[in-house]
Image (tube, rainbow, N blue to C red; front, side, top):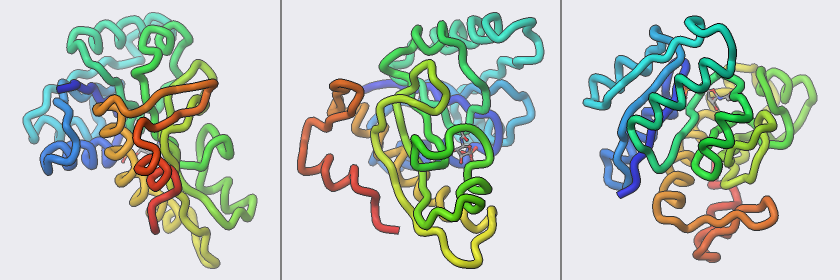
Length: 214
Ligand code: GAR
């Protein structure tokens, strides 16, 4: 069975959805550890309460991004994970870190990439007046919020939405698609060809790569 390490910076609701899927038997992975760059990340406590090993590597203790990333990579490597999952990990990662975990470093981002990379995605989606918004699970490459897309889920932007209501609608989809994407990875069903992700079982992949119903 593949093992995963999950990186968080805060609330950790995506981490929860992954732990829930593992507990429910729908995600065949072993959760080796949950790591955070912040000791006060609420998700750490709840991971520990569920019996998962937790570690903190505080970025403020390091003089440079590279030094922090090297220390973080060392802690991750100590768990020998097959997959490293960024789940609300709010740090820009150095090229060296990304290269070290190339092909097994995955991120979830709260927009339909390549639209709205970076921060405040829901606010920016509302400001632009887009009618469709969503989330993306993708392989991580050195370019921020960029990389081969595994799955996306779309939601409507409704009249009267504010940042909170739109964020909540997207988050519900994040909690569906991240465990799904990780299951495909754990089952070795995904291949990257020319920067595009192909699913080994086309009929399943085609169904799921179109966003799940809202
Ligand atoms: C999620 O919406 C995730 O997509 C986003 O942070 C939130 C974390 O929530 N990630 C990014 O913006 C990364 N660029 P969570 O801690 O409850 O999972």
